[in-house]
Image (cartoon, rainbow over all chains, first blue to last red; front, side, top):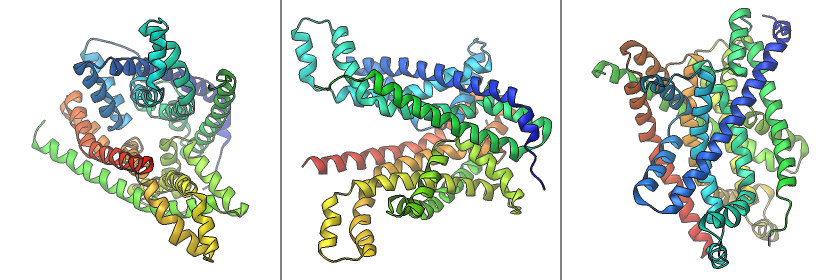
Length: 220
Length: 214
């Protein structure tokens, strides 16, 4: 058995598009996750019983079931609810919901790390509740949680591979198509693994650089 | 969904638990090696461990499963699917547990090492009698957390074609055309096992932070 990577190399254009698909899923999924995360924490902090319970239940269910089962469930549930989306949009939705549950946990931890005196001081200065949340709680909290969010983003990027199960357009599904045409399974998946490794290394480096710039202000 | 389908799903659940146990037990054995190499002062031990951890944390578990599944036969190991999946999960777990335990070992206060040195303990005794027992306790919450991750991760064996709980769900769902019911039940089965573990992990974490703040 000899290895033949040439068939994989010949498909470099398809792979490049696959990488773009993966990054697209990751970026939009993370954006949705952040929205869900901030909304979830805002609901939890409002301390209303039933909405808080629903958010907590959402977080626990997402965190304690596999993403694969979640994405299948959403994939089959949407059409039954009369919503027809293409697989890639469905994948972004599933990634956003999954990442959102983790984002809620991370953001809540960051928000809780802001002492209550800060909020009270903000209110005493005559800021609105919304302003206090945005300027005094959210921004410093973001700085504190940026590292966790960064690794969550990497994790989400790696999770996009699972979206091949509903044939969303991303690197793994592109790879599976090449595999089906060439039967070079090992070569294809080995190459994909290396591409994913490069993607996460570059992402990690870029996020660290962005973090350095964006949060370059004194703590106190 | 009848009794027959439910039994089929439960069989899948059995395989999910077997895969998790294989990955976790193998991961413990090799994870200890990875962690000890990672904290070693010798570069030729430390760098391979860093690369190993980076490789498994920087690539999708799905790819790791595929590479093992198609790669092992190329290397001359004609193993059944469960063994290939178990091998990949073990390697995956060794990297993650190794990194968790590296953190725990380095979180043990430096005074402990100094005290052990002052008492004239050998390197081996210092590590295994002083540092490791304390690191073990520190690492428990994260270790339990990873066990939940691993259990959920075994579902990816379904994409490789191995019939565990998630794959059993796909098969049953294709047979009876009730995907929401089937994946709902499958989700509940995962949840029933993972949730208590998560709660236990959080309990350990709380108890530990209470101990620290005293």
